[in-house]
Amino acid sequence: MQTAQEAKARKSTLQGLPISDGMKEKLGKAGLDKNMLTQIFQDGGVKGLLSVLALPERYDQISGRHAKPRITKNLQVLTN
Image 1: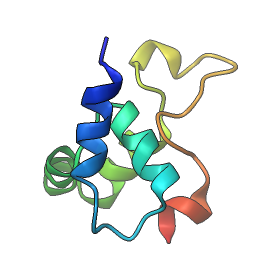
Image 2: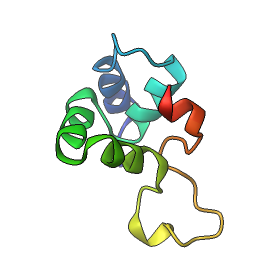
Image 3: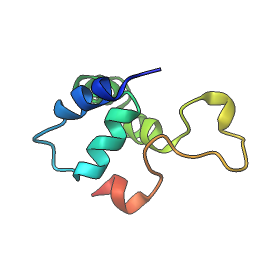
Image 4: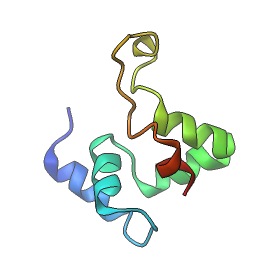
């Protein structure tokens, strides 16, 4: 399990991106930093990035009735 300090360090890598502080905090807590997001985009493009942000953290949670997205599944947030 990650510490709050690690999440804060990941959040700091996201400074300069045009997203809210709340989204940066969620990304940091989810274990994602700017380098990871860049790599995901290079490997999977927009679809890969949207999948990582909108799908649950673990594959076995996808079919769960109350599965929560890793970051958000709000299309307005994801596409702006």
